Amino acid sequence: MKFLCIGRNYAEHAKELGNEVPDEPVIFIKPNSALLQQNSSFNYPEFTKELHYECEVVLRICKNGKNVHERDASSYYDAISVGIDFTARDLQATLKKKGLPWEKAKAWDNSAVLGKWDFIPAGFDKDNLQFSLKKNGELVQSGHTKDMIHNFDKIISHVSTYFSLNIGDVIFTGTPAGVGECVVGDELEGFLGEESKFRLTIQ
Ligand code: MG
Image (spheres, rainbow, N blue to C red):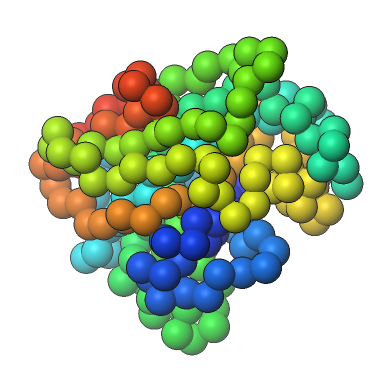
């Protein structure tokens, strides 16, 4: 299982980090060791001093595939939730400046948090989903899938050009504006619509 992650998929977020809005999806991968197992605690990593949350809609791949056409893409995912693409922002800034890959800033152990899955119902309107993150009970991030630069089907089609999709893979679809720092003791809670999908405390 791997995480296929999309960067800069919301124009406002690209702007807040001073990045250009890309004309095709920015992709990076987290390995399966990045998954924070259910009921495990999340510990602040020792190699960063600037840990950021990025709340994102996540999709679960249900069919193996390669070179998937956009018109067929919706049959390749069957479940949806929200998750966190934890990022060591200070490390990422250093790596970006040197033109180096992001893995050390993004793909470390436990950097991928997944909420409880919902099966996608028939007739589901994927461009009309609201999601949000609260930190210590206060709303810090709020996004809507209509604001994505590349929608779910475009993402699936694009990533499958480069990487085979395997059953159980997870797509992180990009974070909206409002990313920010978290510290030991902070509680993060992610919502898809009104429904709470995960809650964790940084330890
Ligand atoms: Mg992200």
